[in-house]
Length: 500
Image 1 (tube, rainbow, N blue to C red):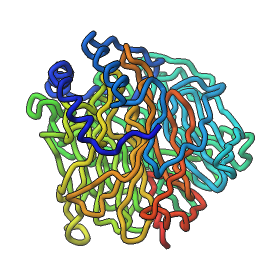
Image 2 (cartoon, helix red, strand yellow):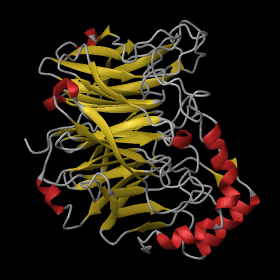
Image 3 (cartoon, rainbow, N blue to C red):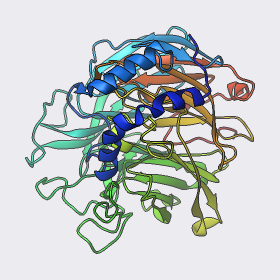
């Protein structure tokens, strides 16, 4: 089944639902984003929705305005090649990385390695049990890096949960040797302040620098005390990864307050997260440039000296952004797409009541040169299809689709699915393709959908939180030239020069 890509029909249908979802919208407006966006440690549990919401979801499915429960729909220019369900790792699926013929898929219980030499039939090469949310994953040469952002009894892969208030608890970065893809070996662990929610690699010939993003300090947490207004920098020698260590904690938001100089959040800025660290950073090593999505702030900074990053510009959006989540540069490095994870990834925000400018992408042009560069807001982008009140949906992780002269991106939207869109004109972004499943449930709000959707060597790969690993094939004259670009390695938060 292929649904219409024209959003007008669904908007007319969902106007009637706006009043019933208004309470949710009001709560999202009045309350700052949750302290820990992205699904938590425990298994996802369904949240009851109102009877009216359940009735409206069923009616919308019956009318063909949203797909049925678990039904797959897509635009004509996308094919769903395969889905590989979860196996021995039952936890939440998270981020993806790529190297040669392999894809590396994070999961809150560890990580899984796929052989994708035949994208129509990926094969599992290894599954490593190593619990600790959120297990954000990256690779560089023979090394794999895994984030742990939950309080554990120790740094081993046999650890158990332990209260963050105990000094002996551990959170941080783990490093594996993946020279043998079938038998990864755990070689190093580095504890970092407030753990590692996400991380970003700045690779060099002899060393790999790791920028660790974490947040939400508390005076009761011995290893996560305020102020926490910067990032941890880890240096990992390639030939001796066991010597990995923190080499600095650059302050990105200097200030005199107890939490530094970042966005104060509510009540000064109602509905906006207070900045107490960063959620995600994307680097362009060839340009010595980075963009940080830091809770209540978006920043642009120089990484010419990777151990001492320097902030160039900083922006806020205290009207429509609740939680600055991630960033993507265009190929020319004259634009940045920031995402807003309104509701922490667990709320239904792709509806008429929330509207097209909240829980969306913010597109910023980069003007000026050198240290005088500025971020200038141009427009918002949000998927043009409304989702049911039982579907968590908001802007999430995506990557460029490398076509010269165009700014094209594929992006995950949780249960909103996968969207391919064009932001060549910063002021007029538009969707050109999509893929989605119907709601996991028509009676409860359950956490699921695409966590990441990335383009790699001719295919789109998506890690679905609940359903597993998806492979999509995009066939469109506007994106087909990207098929000529082949990479040896891809960590999306370490953006390559696709045409070098």
